[in-house]
Image (cartoon, rainbow, N blue to C red; front, top):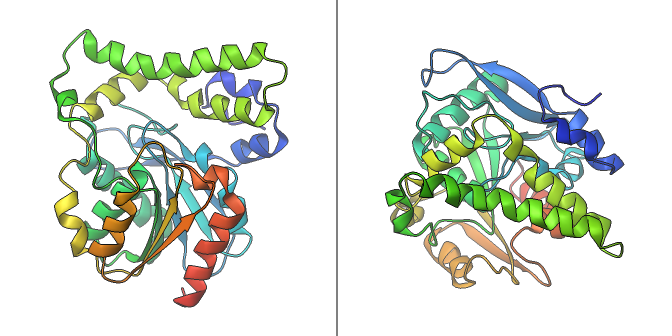
Length: 298
């Protein structure tokens, strides 16, 4: 049965694997000092054995971006994915000002409440920046890092923090309208790959959650992880850097910078792969992650 706390548009999903993944989404009322009320936090937990893997999604995304990767990892290792505060299907509350700091605090409370043992932290795109920031703040929690086409050196332009009404709303709404347009056009084109339609559906589903606009505006105005670059060299955990060479969102030089700045790191470039290896090449991505874990006996 599909969770009743998800938007009604979830019923439009036709792909059996996507439906099975959505059916496994759970929710916990997570107590934090960020708000008076517990935060209803969505996550998925599968598999057993080994050091737990925790997957962190990218900007304006959700745990659905791991619908192909997580089952592959969970077949051999305990694996979690969580919707970061202000994103995905995790509850948004008006009293919270969304920023990298509150994301980190919420993530720590999630880890403490449900996992509470050292983890392998896997971050994709913005989730990679979150993973680095979290690791530097709570080094005792993280045994190793996996960065998938991670943010860190290339960040949001500085002008976004100066957006003011109504332009802040319009800028965020533009993100949603792009998905709606793509979905409408894709529905008309009979020869369009059904996988592309599914990807669009999954990418926009969380945008129907209450207070999505408010949380996005709040986060974007902070500038995100614009202050992270100078701290990346402080990472001392074994780190695997996976990089789709055809990334059209981040410059290829960023991959080399991560390898140079993180002393105990290994860079693997993925051919014919763009910004989201977890969706474009889930088999290879899972193999590289599991090999990394096995090599370090995690």
